[in-house]
Image (tube, rainbow, N blue to C red):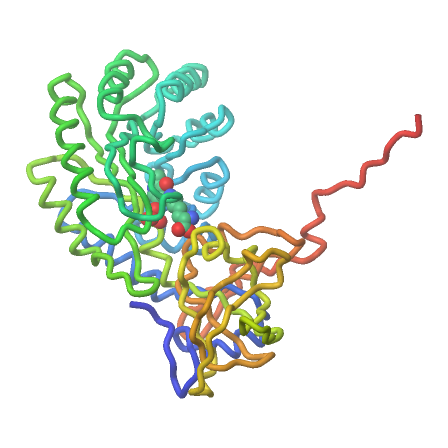
Length: 419
Ligand code: LLP
């Protein structure tokens, strides 16, 4: 469910015609719907209303301060993976006791920052990291609260680049080694064991991998109990998918039901780290047609958004629906929608049937709220797009379009000495 819809053949976000927005803010531009963000957060969080839980929105999906602030105001916490994300979360007012910190490569500076802020827990991914965090906590005179990220070795049946819970992946610690690591953690002076963590992948469209992982985690929890390790938090990560095309991922309430069924009799507080399922369909990328071009083998629609703005189609071959802002033609054409970047991999859609469009028309690339802006870059020295949040009949620019000057701000022309 989202609040992008046609009225009189014109595409709206909530009460704003997107054509008006494109004219006023320019393109390319990310547009998010406040009602959709709120609704998705409530549906996910509400699905666990009857059990003790914390929804820690995964900042990497969309890290704009206004969006973090919104979820924080709704009682949400966050899952972070870097000092930069912690900085954002704190700036947006997320209380430290609602922050969990994942990721395989935390640096000393990042660990210190998180310890000083007093976050809820580190999700630790290796025994070397455990030692490092113990030692930094000792130096700073505090105790680090931790969970170990367990790799349950299940196949999430998603794109290999976003599968994280299989043996061959760099993430987490396998079950047997995790037991040893918990034993080690028990004896560390500056470590307080709080939980068990697991995240198996992203854009999962079936429930069974989640359930398989949980079954393995339950066995681990029993063994930890027998070892005298008490676990207060069970962090089940994120990963629930959204419909981009024809997929039919489970609804959050079905996901919750399956999980709660599996966890009967357990008294931990549950933590979830959803990203995409909350923001994915709450955002679009607005773009303008620059030119159309017909070659012997293809019809190209060349738009002003490229792989630097939305890399998912190029990187994963992902499908994003594309819709015109103004529906005027019923005539269709098979086209490649491509950006201005000097790479053949720069496309938003390939061999797509679209209504016939012309230079100056606008298109909406749908379901771009997650891993859209956050994965954008300045490649080809293209300023990053503006971000706009629509609420009812008002809109707010929540990130200005970058300027050329912004792009070179940190650069210096080296003055070489003459000798
Ligand atoms: N927790 C951890 C530890 C994660 O690594 C991730 C995502 C999440 C939570 C949130 O997962 P979600 O609920 O959004 O599926 N760039 C890719 C997705 C990468 C996901 C990385 N980790 C894409 O555009 O599809």
